Image (cartoon, rainbow, N blue to C red; front, top):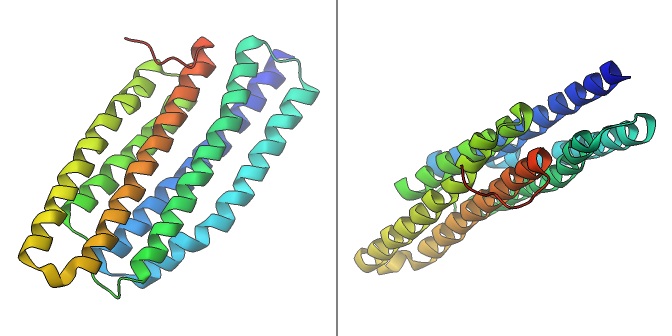
Length: 214
């Protein structure tokens, strides 16, 4: 029985890694579209939403099958419950990347600024580490993701200041500046969803949604 349980959890980990990879890819494509004015990448990011929804449904079915056909212990139940919560956040991350890409397409080929690129890199790392924490059942990685939210918040504030300076120097670019603020806000939201994932990892390990201290 335990071997079947372990096999089911391995399958779940594989699917979670795959879905996390799709979420990371969506962020990366949106960033490429923004920093290079690449409309193809923006359209690819938008198209990924259908694929990640299919992956979400597949994981839901896997979790339900695991719960119904096996006899999981308490920690196994927490792991599966956390996974069901996490896939909602990963799906939302991909949706945000798609919305961002649509916004980028409306910018007419104008590219981003260093602040938005830094935010993209930071949030993509948070998503990757949150999934890694789940697969490894590693509290330290999950807590690192939660702490990283402060870094993203700081980058958001720095990016806003960068945009304000741009407006002062080039007031004719105010519409472009508004687009950049919206995109920075999208990245901040992605960071929030990565934190949610990390907190569910902590719940799966400890049974508490409180991140606690190391």
